[in-house]
Amino acid sequence: MQIIIEDKGDAVALIEKTDSSSSQLVIPVSKAQLIHGMKEVLGDPFKTDVFIGDVMLAKTRDGLAVHTQVGRFSIPYVHAFPLLSEA
Image: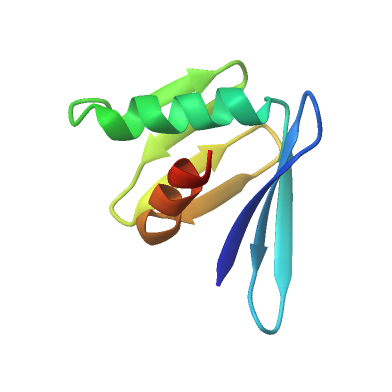
């Protein structure tokens, strides 16, 4: 599995690709805001979630859950930390 953050200016597309399928969720935040929110929630062991406008990032047992009005996208921890190191 591969998780990609595709910058679309004032929005980003979260893309999950596997050998057999792919899924995508477009969220109304910039890539910089998303990365900042991920660092904020992952950097504080006492924080369980953070809001970026209408988007909520929440820690789960297996990773980060990105919640919006239109859907939910899961980023496993094994993929979240490499995304932060790329930014």
